[in-house]
Length: 480
Ligand code: ADP
Image (cartoon, rainbow, N blue to C red; front, side, top):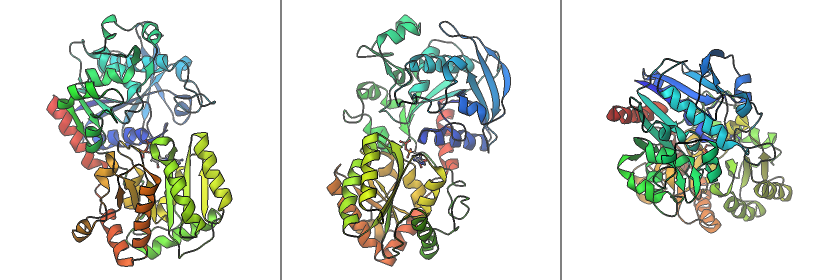
């Protein structure tokens, strides 16, 4: 099959979150399964600088957009061809693809991703300059949402899949943006792009794609509820017959403690003593007191309300104060959480190390060192770090939501008996519920046989992309 995969980020070129991992790994896995894949992204300044690109030709776009250049290259470490949409006025900006350096959304995001959506739609029809007609167009998140809408009344368009990676980000703009984009009038209606008087990019995908997917079976059910549907639960319910949840995989080469190029000591996840060498090295490197008799708890992620970082701060303090656990946290995001973390680190400098920023190498070292990983997310479409943790012998402590519910199996007596338990799961969104789960984990950590059973079950997790990519191929086939 010929698959055009459209996304606003892909690891190695540009990354702000899990979308970048999926958009690098799924096209790679599809291409390894023998499919012809093209990945299309905006030509951000940083992505252009990272690689050699060849000019393929000019793509003429309808007003209000200027013509754009299509650049061609290869996604690093893969066979996947990449097309970058080069529109310097829109994308030649350093740093984050969505936010200006002061942390606000770029004021012309509707134009930037409007242009991107239009370019995707045109490429999907296979004309100049690519002359490559895909069987399937696979769009991802609101930044690509206009493409399915623009293609909806075109004959000979490819089958269109739209994947929701996080419904909390919908691409909402005032009505004036709809006019500025010169979108067809019939799209301004509640069955199409209008969302309570605003323009919704994500509705373009949800209303018009032939098939909808999201990144875990549980999240696929959750987004049909008012609590998690973000106002789109009604439309999603109407389309529930074409909506499925397919779990994300992880890059099992990049995330493998036996071959990880970032970590001090390679180890087998079931070898607790070998892993402890990394724990000790990280404690020293981050300035923690090297207390091998204490478990090391960790968290890595965007410091936003979704991830429950506030619950972590509250639950950790008494443990650090009582000298019952140590912690390491890596992340960046909202100032209030960054400051909260820094305060905690100043109060207990020997017990908790916090690093504000984005640091891939450190993320690997933390996974290779921590005993348990905290993910008390309020919602979590899929989540990747719990899967990295399972691979690294780091026991996940998670809230039962989205992909966390689908990948982590609580250490209940029954699950332990069946050899399936691989972590600790709690339900209520509260620091008290998180604390109870941490207490259960601390208790298990002091029982070597129990801990070994959890780690063994976790390290056996089948979370490679090849398995997941087959599920997408099956979905594409059913569409054709
Ligand atoms: P989301 O997409 O909601 O941010 P995911 O768990 O799906 O959450 O993916 C986040 C990805 O980004 C993971 O690969 C995680 O390790 C990585 N990540 C997030 N924050 C950081 C950070 N500060 N440093 C390094 N890696 C990070």
